[in-house]
Length: 131
Image 1 (cartoon, rainbow, N blue to C red):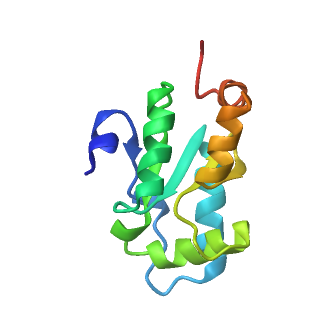
Image 2 (cartoon, rainbow, N blue to C red):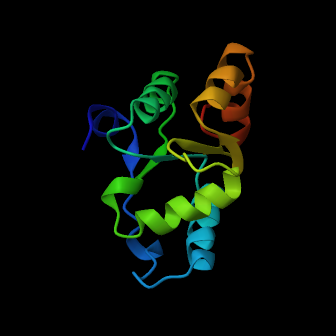
């Protein structure tokens, strides 16, 4: 487990939500949607990705306790990655951040929201921050 995850993020193996190895893309899309809707903040990440690390550090530094799904550590990670590519319209999906069930995007979009002052209100509205 990486440094950020062990401090304040919840690293989420899909537990009961795991799709079988022969799963279809449709079930992977359902998993992504379910995780996004059921959690205030979800980060789909790759454990060795520097951009994923920056997003996790930023959100944890703000006091958020995001659910982190490490794509490279899960059996169905490649299927989830394909589903995320369909959501985002781009092939490089790590990191992908959902706040309040809504797709925010990757590092660029999260940083732009933070710099413009829109990120904290989004997090409060989603119930990820209380102050």
